[in-house]
Image 1 (cartoon, rainbow, N blue to C red):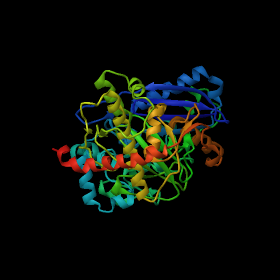
Image 2: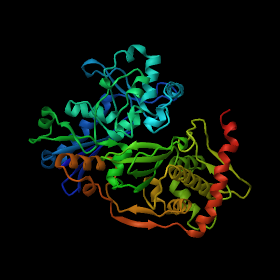
Image 3: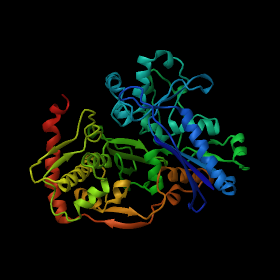
Image 4: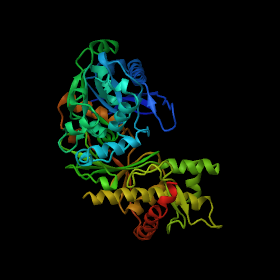
Length: 486
């Protein structure tokens, strides 16, 4: 038996699987986010721990015999969060989360101070990453900075409480801006830029490695008699990729969730910082991955639904399935700014081409197409980094819309595969990593693709017309960028 624990932003989810990877039980415990100032986002690390205990306690109650046989635990978590520990592992301040935007000035300062940052880290310095957050603490909370003994990521704080070890995996560590991503090791140069050193970092491991063992008192709490290995685990997207079998080079998934991700597994480190591509280590050895990230995917449709007094499913039903040409209206889905390809926090959503004939259906299709074009932008800059995809798994809430998948497949001109119902998320991927760490199994034999329920093929005629629509979309942002920033 194996557990996978995912430390999310809104909840902690734990799943229990058997040796055949059947999910036997799952439990979720909600988390809250503190926003003490506009643009800030923080959580108490103790809340992660209490939520973790609550989920495992729940499984212990519902499946005591199965939990008692657990031999491995894998961890996944929200990336980038700065968890600062002092002497005796005391938490120095609330953790600063991935979606906290306070450190924009520090990003600019770090890139000026360390011109090689992008080449080493494979990424642009963005407020979401860990290093700029620490630089903000050094500048604004020097008394806290002076006490830092260790900096841990969210899932790695939970690891500390589970096993008493300071460790992180390569995929999560790659999101700190302190990792030499090609070399899979901490960079002294990047650490020095924020006044830190390697002694303040956790030990690095592959996601499939054993990093420690479950504490005796916790084994007793859950009735586990044998040794329990804690795997390195992975950052949330890398762990999700393990859950979906997206670990072999060229395999990809498209996540059409609140935000959007186009994730591709790579055989080598392949950055494209000019296009704001994220280039990270994968959670499995000798593998990397790239991501294009858009900040408002289904969030864009949910915004339109709120504005029109309809639900998102009602809007998509009203838009129908008869798509012969792009909408006459072009929508930029930059409601919260944008990462790939612009890295522009000041970008905002825009409609262009509205006239008296426009109704809700036209606007709905414009929003869905705008998100599709944003994914096309991600694919374009991945292509510029030397990466292409032949198809992608489609996951997330938006993937339940047949219309949206038809639009996205035709805009990308790539087939989108719909996985058969079942667990494929980050907690499941973490459980798979726990299984590999405990048994020594080959990750390629464990982290396999799910059965495919259906394939949405691009419409060739529509794809050609969407090429023209994408040209209009691409021309819009540079034409109005200065207006957005005023």
